[in-house]
Length: 420
Image (tube, rainbow, N blue to C red):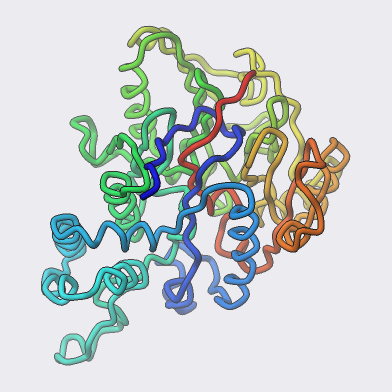
C-alpha cells in the first residue's frame, strides 16, 4: 500500500502535488428548469458535453500531479463498517430520511457511494410519495463537481466547509469523512460546525478562501461566506504564534457570478493576479479590510483602498491582469460571467482556465503567458517543461454554465512551498 500523503497548502500557486476531483455524473442532469434554482443552477446542463469538457481538465491534471476522485475515496472508506454506519446515520438524520437507513447500509460500498452522490430514487409506493413532486428520497449532489467549496486545505489543516445552503451540506459531510478516514491522505481537519461561537450564523465555502502566502490569507465575504465565518477563521489563526494577516474582501450578493471571491480574483504567479476590474480595482461600496493578528491577538482592523494595494502594502506586490481585457466593460462583464477570472494554478505562472474567454486569454498572452490548448497536453504534442509561463485552456461551453471554473472544480490538498 502506498504511503499516505500529508496534506499541506501554503500558497495558491505552489507546484501542485495532489488534487481531489469529482467527474460530473447523472446528478448534474437530474434536474429540470423548474427546480434548477433550488439546485443552485441558473440553467440545466448537457451532461455528455460537460463530461467531455471535464475530461480535458482531469486528463491534464493526471499528467501533472496525483489526482483522486471523490467517488473512489468515498468507496474506500465505506468498506469500514463503523465509518459506513456513522456516515449513513448522519445523512439520514440530517435529511429526514431515516427510513432509508437500512436499505442504504445493505448496499455494497461502491453502490452506496454512487447513491450518496447521485441520489436515491423515491419509490412511488404510498399515496404521499405518489402525489409528491419529488423524484428522489435523497436528493442528488448537483454541485459536487465543484470540489473546491466543501473542504479546503489551509496551511497544515483541512478546513471543512460550513455550507451556506442546505442542498450542499452533504458534500461537506462526505469530505470530512474522507479526510478523517482515508488511507491515502493524512490530515488534521477543523470543522466550524462544531464551533461554540455563532455556529448557526457561520458559513464558509472554499471559493472564498485563498491562501496567498504563509502569513497572508485572503477571504471573501458575501452570500456564501459570512462575517461570522471569517471570525471563525480568525479564531483558528489566533491559535498560532507569530504574525498573520487576513485580508477580507466584501462581495456583491447579485448576480450569482459573484458568489465567491475566486470568481473576481485569483493568483497567477508570485507577482501577478487576475482581477475583475469593477469589483477589485475600481472604487465601489465593497470594502477591503485588513485584520492583523500577532501572537494570538487581533492587533488591528482597518479599511484598505483595494485588495491589490493592500497586498502590495503587505510586501506582496502584484501586477493585476484584467478579466475580459482592459478596453470594454461589456466584454469584462461577459467573460467574468463565464468564470473568466477563475484560474487554477499548477505552479507559479502555470495555470488552467477556460478557452472561451478570448479577451482574457489575449490579456494573459500579452503578459507573457503561452496559450496551450488542453488537447495538445493530453495528446503529448507539447512538453510543458518547455514553457516558463503558460495557461492551459480547457473547453467550457457547458461547464461554465454550471457557475464555476477550473479553480472551483479542484480541491488541492498538497502543494510545494513557494520561495517569495
